[in-house]
Image (cartoon, rainbow, N blue to C red):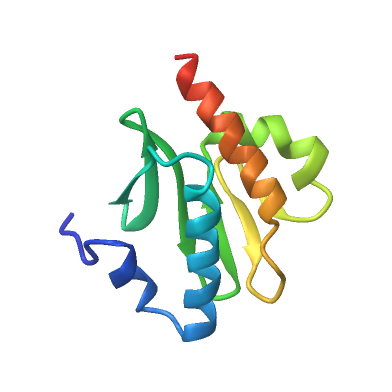
Length: 120
């Protein structure tokens, strides 16, 4: 599959300014958890690597931002934080565009993924 976007900036520019701002907040929130994260485009989505392993992905859709922290992380937070408020599947949770991003939840999930990768 040929890459259409090469970096976060190109991806963000696809969307209206209001969505771009949300994406930038999400990006900064994730990046703030560890300066060693590497940004890349994976599966045509903005993504982060940690210790050369996929950490999280995210993508924008018509009504939500899909956040992909990999299945084990979602299992960890499903009953506690996700199930009551967000649509989710085995590998993704949907954050509605009309709502504020749950930055505290995102930070918790990212920290959990860091520990998971460090324990591999």
